[in-house]
Image (cartoon, rainbow, N blue to C red):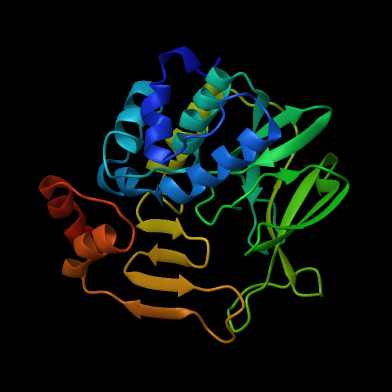
Length: 284
């Protein structure tokens, strides 16, 4: 299903710096999840530059493993699912609605993986950008932390007539975010357990990379999470979020010609001269 037999597993694990056990266990899942989140960047530059993001495994692994680049959730999950399949995990993919506190129903534009181990299910959400550093167990009510960032998962109606899960994150102090629970939490995204397949991802990926109605087809967005901080590039605004720090996060507006160096130094993304030349006019 996910072309695991075509994945260069050794190259993928080397890119993650993962040298641990390869048996399909919870310990392996946790270590693999964390290594992927900390090693593979989230960025939508291909959509901004070319309005196209190929999702075939060969293209994805050449970009995310063979080059100093990143990708969106669909590219992340294409690579990650191939690795899980190759390692012998039982899992299926789902899509979710990114809400970030909004009350209206938004389209399903986020890919995730649900892993099944010993009668328990785990949300392995490695492609959000500001992704949890550990899988989150699916229960009716889960409160968890990955040691830095806190999360709340609740089961219930997520859209009219649809049962599923809502993932919440704390509302950060000083930011213009919606506390839609009344106790300091906001909806990050919702999802159902309706299995999704590579064919479904190709459709949504095409919308996300080429539609004028997609928030990621024209606006540069890059994220890199560390164990103690999160870097975000929102068009030309560079933002650094540190958990527990009061007030607004550190941010500044960049000049267009600063972007290639910031992408390299802060996010570990190396643009070719051609891509840098294509990018700069889109930032002015």
